[in-house]
Image (cartoon, rainbow, N blue to C red; front, side, top):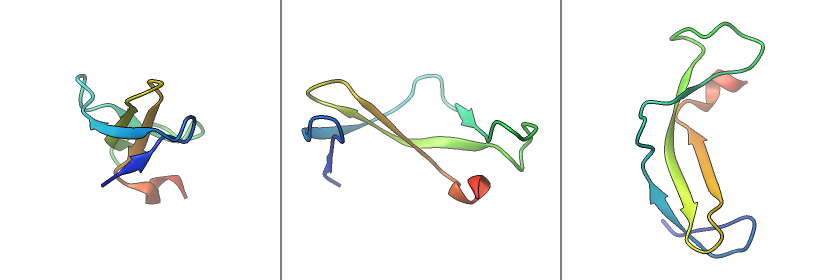
Length: 62
């Protein structure tokens, strides 16, 4: 999948976060298995270095 950087419009490269799994959750909830999501995939801009993260389970943020 070709993805363009939202900052400079260059091609972004899919990357892996070495400290996997990094989990994310809404600031106003207690971190539990039901409220946390992993970050996957991750993209890095090949020009400016901007990093773009996506959560695996977006429903946990509704």
